[in-house]
Image 1 (tube, rainbow, N blue to C red):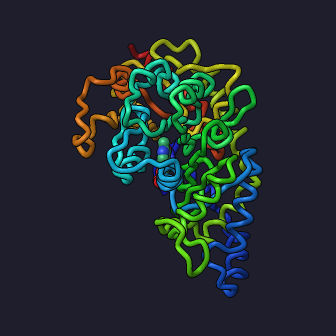
Image 2 (cartoon, rainbow, N blue to C red):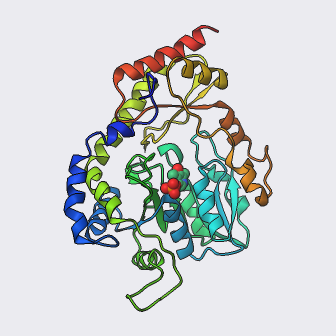
Image 3 (cartoon, rainbow, N blue to C red):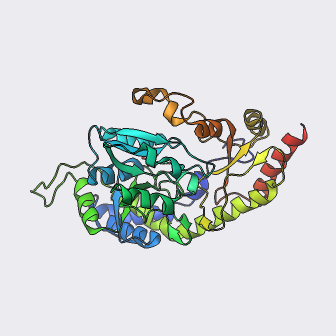
Length: 370
Ligand SMILES: *Cc1c(COP(=O)(O)O)cnc(C)c1O
């Protein structure tokens, strides 16, 4: 076990008693129903119901949960897809795997794309817009959708960090043509490996996505279109079926924890909060604040046993592996500032009040030292 007083990963607790899942697996394995079987159909139904969408399609990762909808709306080699400059690499991976180019828009202090900058980025090659609902908050979809409609551009939402996020009661993932979610072990609703799921309200999209994830096979013998091998495994669906009933409770606990931190840190000189809005239900996949002398605070907290993190220390657009797209450090000033100022505290559903008190106390101690 680690020596952290406040550890970041809660997976040992999340799956601390795996017996109900293992019992189910023991019953399931002799059925041989390993791909596209009953457990997956059940999980898809439950997930669609959870989000409030018409269809859900299980795929093999959050990355593919973005790539397949982009492919379904026609994104292909040489096209441009507008997305946020600050996101996890998987967003860009999904675009690049199709041979398309990510066209970045800077973010604002919500951590999502600054929608006011989108229109200027649209060119004749633009094929889709991929807003990223980073950290568990949400892009200003009410402002983005009219722009997309004006230029007749499909919108695919990256909701990988935002299961159950909503604004004015309308969920993230229900605004565009489709939305991708990740079930990776580090996400709010997590399984025992890689999986992703797509939600869409559109029947034609659902039809295409079911083909795309299974080699384009219409029947065992007929290929309707070229597709991928991107099925969510029955075994992961069984884990998902066990967990999904807890999704609302997990979400509410994370929201309560974030409020507890906000209350504890409010007024601490050196700490500034990102945008909070009473209209928005943020689900705090990441609990992030802006911190003065961030690197010093980070080191101090680690020395004090608090496993703080930085999501993400290097702006994605400026990463070495993305050099081919021609962006340079300095192109997106808000993203750059975030990389210098952000710090994430553990805020998961398994934390104790004592642990959160300790984090707040140590942050206060750091700034009191001057
Ligand atoms: C996790 C994540 C993804 C998808 O990641 P997978 O590891 O493929 O499930 C995509 N976008 C964002 C913003 C993510 O955080």
